Length: 305
Image (cartoon, rainbow, N blue to C red; front, side, top):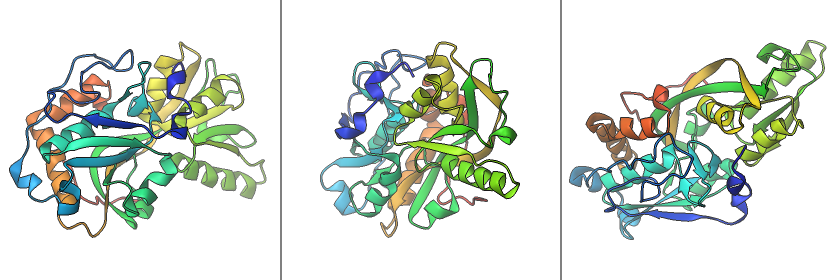
């Protein structure tokens, strides 16, 4: 990708405070550099006293809402050219905190360690493009707020004439701990069971390195969430193209630790309030991901996976 500033950020934790009274979500100024579809600030909501009263005392006492996120997954959450943490989830998370009368503090972590950190009390929410699935629902509660599928990208012109059904024997890049990683493992097993070569699954901690592996021809294809692949196509100046349509659409969920009283219900209420008052749509449109909008937020929605 063309965003070297987003690479290697996991080595040093990043903390971004979103001022609750600044009148903007995201980085607080509305400036997204060249990252978003618009540099226009989105006015955040006011405190909802009813929802704020549902926040557990141990979360509310310091006035902050600590949110774990992987800052390499543009346009959902990433570090822009001005070294600011920005993206759809950053704006939405900041607005949720405002609804609850708190200030959002985002802490960067590796994707595959965020939910464990949430359960261990390191974070108070986990918001990093997590697809809701049965495995995750066993360990945390999840509040739905978006929907996305999996997309596949290859080099421009598709030199290997690849499709999802012809990946046996090829190297495919993917971010570690994602649903796409599990998908590739299942596809590779099917390859070997059918007497074909296994898929070489090249896993990376950062999504930026996944795209780099493909553009540098160290991988033949990559799999990622549909908005992330769409964004990568725009940012690599025509080096990549998408193959086929997205598949396995599923809701994104905000992770909340279990046994936290009404906290998950408060988060769900905050998301639904933003959907109802138009804040949610404005944020998604700002980042060019409005196609993934949903109209109803659910707590622990049913899933087939």
